[in-house]
Structure formats: C-alpha cells, structure tokens
Image (cartoon, rainbow, N blue to C red; front, side):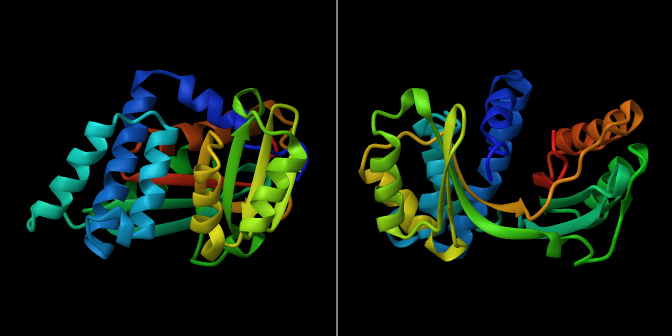
Length: 242
C-alpha cells in the first residue's frame, strides 16, 4: 500500500473551498437520512449511523447540524426516499472508475454520470465490469501530526480491535479492515482518543494505472471534476495513480 495513501488527497479536498465543504455536508446529510431510515435514530443501536456521525465529525460538520439531520430523518415520514445506485466504467487508458450515488431521480443521475464519462473521453460499462479490480475495505487515515501515539502502539491498538493491515506513509497512517470489522476498529480508536482524518468503507484498487499523456490527465480530471460537482454522487473510486 505504500505511497498510495489517500491522505494528501483528502486534505486537498477538505481545503479546496467552501463549495466543496457544502458538497461534503450534502453527501453526509443524505447518508444520515438513509442510516436513520434503515436502522433508527439512536446511534447506540445503529452502527451504520454511528459510522456516518464519525465521518461527519472527521469532516468538521457541526454537532447541531448532525442532530438536525437525524431529527429530520426520524420525524419526517414523507422525507425523500433516496435510492443507492452504483455505476462502473472506464476513463482514459483503461482506468477503472466506480461511482456511488444516492438519488431521488435515477434518470437524472444516470444522464449526469454518463455525461461526465463522455466529456472526459470515457464510457460507462456494465455492472461488474471494473469492480472486480477493487477490494471493499474499511479504511481509516490518521494524520501523524495529530496523533500522539507512536506507530507501534497505534498498530497494536488497531490490530487488537480486528484490523487487517497497517501501513505507515510519509504524513499519515493507514488502517485497513474487512467491511464487517470497520465499526469495531473505528470505535476502538475513538475510545483510545485517536484523531481520524478519514474513516469510511471504501473501494481499494488492487493495481494502479499511470497516466503519462497530458491529454489523458486532462480528460481524467474532467471526469472526476464533473462527478464531484454532481450532488447525487456520494463517492468516486478509481485506480489512477496520481
């Protein structure tokens, strides 16, 4: 895993601008609504909601905004029903891209996602066309500067809680778990007062693709930027080695 920590990317995205922050809050707000609908409004009895709350806090979402989102989802029986859809496709030079969306209008989302791929010279494929190139994992990123534990102590805490893998990067630590063990590991780190820059279940590429041509890089960025601007898009995973 060395050299492929998402931390620099996460930091860059967080600091990008207020619009990006607004987009992140929209994404998390939808995830809260879905988690409450599926498992109830009490985080103590809803591990999915606990995980979304942790993600919200890692992204500096204010507590009152989180609580408002939970109350709204719990109290409004007529709230929008979001459907979860995943799209898979190819970018320049065979790069693999997976797009997770939560939408109240499948046709709108499908059209926007297809448009993003097309404008960047890529194409949407069939379900399963690229997902076999990724492993679904719980991924926790810890900023070295904010963590008081040394690498060995943090590694033992994570492994004891059920983590699969621990990697030390230049500016961060990366902890990987099986999806089913993610909540337990995240909660163990939270109990141990370990600050997490990011904590989510994600898709980790098995191999990476380099883009060397200027045109290919421009096209790939076009796809990612258009997907990033779409409020229906919750997450984008790809195997481009940036």
